[in-house]
Amino acid sequence: MTALRHFLDLDVLEPVTLRGILDDSVARKRRRRLGQVEAPLVGKTLAMIFEKPSTRTRVSFEVAMRQLGGETVMLSQVDMHLGRGESIADTARVLSRYVDVIMIRTQSHDKLLDLAAHATVPIINGLTDRTHPCQLMADIMTFEEHRGPIAGRTIAWSGDGNNMAASWIQAAVRFDFKLNIACPEAYMPATPILTWAKEHQGRITVSHDVAAAIKGADCVVTDTWVSMSDTRTDGKRELLEPYRIDRAAMALAKPDAVFMHCLPVYRGQEVVPEVVDGPQSVVWDEAENRLHAQKGILAWCLNVPTI
Ligand code: CP
Ligand code: NVA
Image (tube, rainbow, N blue to C red; front, side):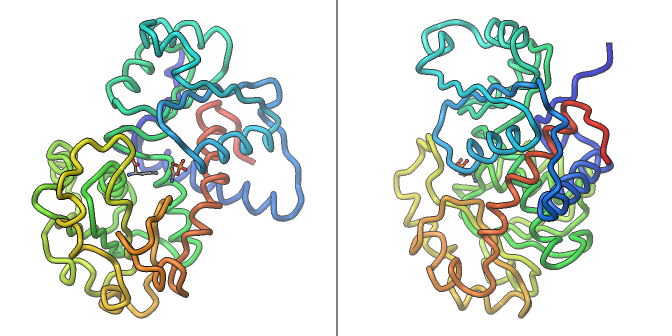
């Protein structure tokens, strides 16, 4: 039996695989724009398990499956036995008998790994407390659409060292760019991810100096200060105040730098409206690219030949 093509995280996938998924996503976006209809996933079903809210991930996966000819089943833990004691392992075994691929958004990264360990179909990480790799595929795609190859470029992250920061760290290693992170001491990215990046010669800096992180960057990124199911919120906003992206912060980056944010955005907190709604912002393209990137991910997981 060949190994299942799980899309769990960027650190466990080879650069050549990730680049292949991106190339395929870009090609599918182009063909869709030309009005070409393709349905390689006819007869295939994606199950989506959501333990947390979602707008973009849910809708982009659902529409991606439909546009590729497949179907989806939406599951929330409240209407599954998973929410009242059935194990993730048994859920994995059962769902694998019905569907061809499963996407899960869960609070616990270990639950994602448990699902993958017991499923006999590919598993996709639709966000955990630790990482958000699908978002990064859309983010890299968006940066490259606007500014060309990301390899060798400098990306600046300012804010919470959260799940998105973790996936940016993994992406920096896999796509060979420099990543400057500015965050408060209390909200540093998780140590194991930084250690992994160091072991893989990642060009990552972590400091509390927003100006130094952003100076000369090709792209400035931030995310919400309070993530879904965030439990450590006491005084967090106050600590993050200096990390807000405003026009003065953007002015430190290259004049043609882009601003990115995975959304949802909280205007006036992590970023001011003048930046997120301003000329350097590419957040709507970034959101759109979730749809195209999901297609590349689904096609890879289901071993659809690239055209
Ligand atoms: N960026 C992102 O994952 O958005 P949702 O939470 O709406 O899916
Ligand atoms: N860090 C955010 C990302 C939302 C897409 C969260 O986990 O809530």
